[in-house]
Image (cartoon, rainbow, N blue to C red; front, side, top):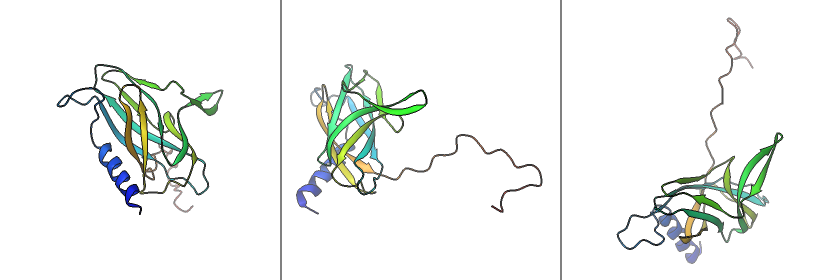
Length: 171
């Protein structure tokens, strides 16, 4: 692996674990905590991917996530999944998303997320994809998306029980 790329990935990985402070002096409590930074793998030739994370704002001031950038994508946009008349779509959030003082922003599947557009290479399980988050107050904050295969979700409701004496184990 290229030493510059390796060192950039290492720095971004280490920064993911640190609390961030935009404008408080040394020794002050860090107002931004970024965690659970991940994405799903993509197939070869896929043009898009989605990034997910959690941001906690411990500051007394509101913060705004404006967007993100990465060498791995032509552009990254903030999107929100919406449903209208039974049709699911994406709505760009061009003005970003506010994180209130003491509040939290969770970018998650089926909600607000980072949309990685024009991917330059597939996202491979186990890989870490460096990117910069852009904040109104904190400026540019480096993080790394951990490419993970999510665990399957539990069924939303239990299956009805089979009538007495009639099991379906033979299928």
